[in-house]
Image (cartoon, rainbow, N blue to C red):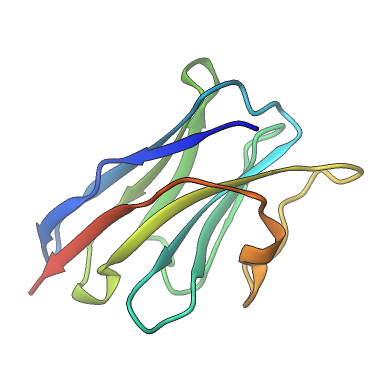
Length: 131
Protein backbone atom coordinates (compact mmCIF):
# COMPACT_ATOMS: atom_id res chain seq x y z
CA UNK A 1 0.00 0.00 0.00
CA UNK A 2 1.32 3.40 -0.99
CA UNK A 3 1.69 5.69 1.99
CA UNK A 4 0.66 9.32 1.65
CA UNK A 5 1.99 12.22 3.69
CA UNK A 6 0.65 15.74 3.51
CA UNK A 7 2.50 18.93 4.35
CA UNK A 8 2.25 22.63 3.77
CA UNK A 9 -0.58 23.51 6.09
CA UNK A 10 -0.39 26.44 8.44
CA UNK A 11 -1.98 29.68 9.49
CA UNK A 12 -2.69 32.42 6.99
CA UNK A 13 -4.79 35.56 6.84
CA UNK A 14 -7.86 35.79 4.68
CA UNK A 15 -6.93 36.49 1.09
CA UNK A 16 -3.64 34.66 1.40
CA UNK A 17 -2.37 31.56 -0.34
CA UNK A 18 -0.99 28.18 0.61
CA UNK A 19 0.27 25.20 -1.33
CA UNK A 20 -0.28 21.77 0.14
CA UNK A 21 1.85 18.81 -0.85
CA UNK A 22 1.16 15.10 -0.61
CA UNK A 23 4.13 12.81 -1.11
CA UNK A 24 3.56 9.17 -1.97
CA UNK A 25 6.03 6.60 -0.67
CA UNK A 26 6.15 4.92 -4.08
CA UNK A 27 4.82 5.68 -7.52
CA UNK A 28 1.03 5.40 -7.25
CA UNK A 29 0.85 4.49 -10.93
CA UNK A 30 -0.79 6.21 -13.85
CA UNK A 31 -4.14 4.43 -13.38
CA UNK A 32 -4.74 6.21 -10.13
CA UNK A 33 -7.15 8.88 -9.06
CA UNK A 34 -5.84 11.24 -6.42
CA UNK A 35 -7.84 13.81 -4.56
CA UNK A 36 -7.86 16.43 -1.86
CA UNK A 37 -10.44 16.49 0.90
CA UNK A 38 -11.02 18.61 3.94
CA UNK A 39 -12.89 18.21 7.17
CA UNK A 40 -13.68 20.72 9.85
CA UNK A 41 -15.08 19.86 13.30
CA UNK A 42 -18.66 18.74 13.21
CA UNK A 43 -18.78 18.49 9.44
CA UNK A 44 -18.49 15.62 7.01
CA UNK A 45 -15.40 15.18 4.89
CA UNK A 46 -15.66 17.24 1.72
CA UNK A 47 -14.08 16.40 -1.60
CA UNK A 48 -12.37 19.44 -3.11
CA UNK A 49 -10.44 18.37 -6.19
CA UNK A 50 -9.50 15.20 -7.97
CA UNK A 51 -7.03 14.37 -10.70
CA UNK A 52 -6.50 11.27 -12.81
CA UNK A 53 -2.76 10.74 -13.06
CA UNK A 54 -2.97 9.04 -16.44
CA UNK A 55 -3.98 12.18 -18.34
CA UNK A 56 -4.01 14.97 -15.72
CA UNK A 57 -7.74 15.45 -16.10
CA UNK A 58 -9.03 17.26 -13.04
CA UNK A 59 -12.28 18.49 -11.61
CA UNK A 60 -13.28 20.54 -8.61
CA UNK A 61 -16.04 21.02 -6.12
CA UNK A 62 -18.12 24.12 -6.60
CA UNK A 63 -17.19 25.34 -3.13
CA UNK A 64 -13.60 26.01 -4.21
CA UNK A 65 -14.38 27.23 -7.70
CA UNK A 66 -11.34 28.69 -9.39
CA UNK A 67 -9.51 29.41 -6.14
CA UNK A 68 -7.90 25.97 -5.83
CA UNK A 69 -5.75 24.10 -8.33
CA UNK A 70 -4.77 20.44 -8.12
CA UNK A 71 -1.69 19.14 -9.87
CA UNK A 72 0.89 16.41 -9.57
CA UNK A 73 4.55 15.89 -10.31
CA UNK A 74 5.09 12.30 -11.39
CA UNK A 75 8.86 12.55 -11.04
CA UNK A 76 8.46 13.46 -7.38
CA UNK A 77 5.41 11.27 -6.66
CA UNK A 78 3.86 14.41 -5.25
CA UNK A 79 0.34 15.78 -5.40
CA UNK A 80 -0.27 19.49 -4.86
CA UNK A 81 -3.14 21.75 -3.97
CA UNK A 82 -2.57 25.42 -4.68
CA UNK A 83 -5.04 27.46 -2.66
CA UNK A 84 -5.58 31.15 -3.36
CA UNK A 85 -7.89 33.81 -1.95
CA UNK A 86 -8.32 31.82 1.21
CA UNK A 87 -11.34 32.48 3.42
CA UNK A 88 -11.97 31.76 7.10
CA UNK A 89 -14.42 29.05 6.05
CA UNK A 90 -11.53 27.21 4.38
CA UNK A 91 -10.21 26.42 7.85
CA UNK A 92 -10.07 22.63 8.16
CA UNK A 93 -7.86 19.57 8.21
CA UNK A 94 -6.86 18.78 4.65
CA UNK A 95 -6.26 15.24 3.44
CA UNK A 96 -5.02 13.65 0.28
CA UNK A 97 -6.36 10.32 -0.88
CA UNK A 98 -5.83 7.87 -3.69
CA UNK A 99 -7.55 5.01 -5.42
CA UNK A 100 -6.13 2.78 -8.10
CA UNK A 101 -8.70 2.55 -10.87
CA UNK A 102 -9.69 -0.65 -12.63
CA UNK A 103 -11.68 -0.42 -15.84
CA UNK A 104 -12.01 3.34 -15.64
CA UNK A 105 -9.91 6.33 -16.56
CA UNK A 106 -11.91 8.93 -14.72
CA UNK A 107 -12.10 10.10 -11.15
CA UNK A 108 -15.58 10.02 -9.67
CA UNK A 109 -17.65 13.17 -9.21
CA UNK A 110 -16.95 14.97 -5.95
CA UNK A 111 -20.39 14.38 -4.55
CA UNK A 112 -21.37 13.65 -0.98
CA UNK A 113 -19.90 10.37 0.19
CA UNK A 114 -17.18 10.22 -2.48
CA UNK A 115 -14.65 9.77 0.30
CA UNK A 116 -15.86 6.17 0.55
CA UNK A 117 -14.48 5.54 -2.95
CA UNK A 118 -10.88 6.20 -1.88
CA UNK A 119 -8.98 3.52 -0.01
CA UNK A 120 -5.71 5.21 0.80
CA UNK A 121 -5.39 8.31 2.97
CA UNK A 122 -2.79 10.56 4.44
CA UNK A 123 -2.80 11.80 8.02
CA UNK A 124 -3.83 15.33 7.13
CA UNK A 125 -2.43 18.82 7.46
CA UNK A 126 -4.18 21.67 9.26
CA UNK A 127 -5.07 24.91 7.49
CA UNK A 128 -6.26 27.85 9.55
CA UNK A 129 -7.44 31.06 7.91
CA UNK A 130 -7.98 34.10 10.10
CA UNK A 131 -10.11 37.08 9.22
